[in-house]
Length: 283
Image (cartoon, rainbow, N blue to C red; front, side, top):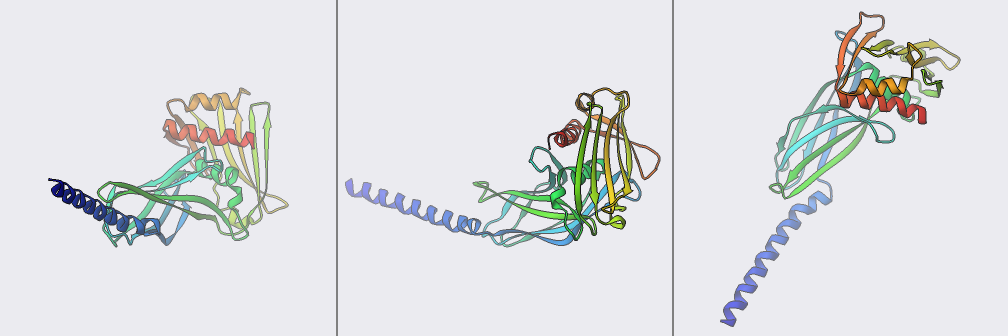
C-alpha cells in the first residue's frame, strides 16, 4: 500500500514537471520577443478629395509571430492619444482573427478621422513630435491576443509617426483665453508651402452658440496656423462645449470654403474633443 502510494506520488510529480516544462517552453519565446509589427507601407494622412471634412489614413502593417503555438483573438488597433494620455481617438480596429504558429497577418489600414479632431491633436497637443523634416502625428499600434488555448493574454505596443506636413517644424505656440468666450491658439510653422497642405476649416455646433475655425496666414516664422474657438453670444465656451457633448453633438463643417457638411459625433468622441480643448487652457 505504501509502495503504491509512493508510485502514484512520483507519477503525479512527473506529470507536473512535464506540464511545467511545456509551459516554460511555450512562455519563454513570449518573454524574449516572438511577436513583432513591421510597417510595410508608411502611414499617410491626406485630406479626402471626395469628403474634405475627413482625413484619410492609409498604410500597411504585418504582424509576425515566431511563437510555437497559435495566437487567438488577435485584435490590432491604431489610435492617437493626447500628450497626458487623458484622451484617445481610435483610428483603426480589425475584428478578431488567429495568427498561426510561426505565421503572419497583413493589416491593410484605410480609415478616416475628422479634420478638426486631427488638427487639434497636431497643432495643440503634440507639438513636440515636429521636426526639421516635417510635422508628424504620433500614433500607437496596439496588438492584443490570447495564447496557449487562452491560458495567457499577450500584447505589444508600437509607436509610429505619421507625416502630415512634409517639411518645416513648429517654432512656437501661443494660447490666449479671453473672458471665457474666446480661445485662440496660434502655432507658428517654418515652412509655408508644406503648411498650406493643412486645410482651413470653419465649424459650428448645432443648437449651441459656438464656432471653431482654423486659418493659415504668413508670418515672420513662415506660416501661422490659428485655431479659434469662439462664443457667438459671449457666453462661456467651456460650459457650452460640455453641454453640447452630452449625448453627442451635431457639427456643421466647411473645409477650404466648401459647402458645409453635417456630421454627428457620438458622446465619447465629442467629450474627447472637448477635453482636448480644455487641456489647452491648462497648458
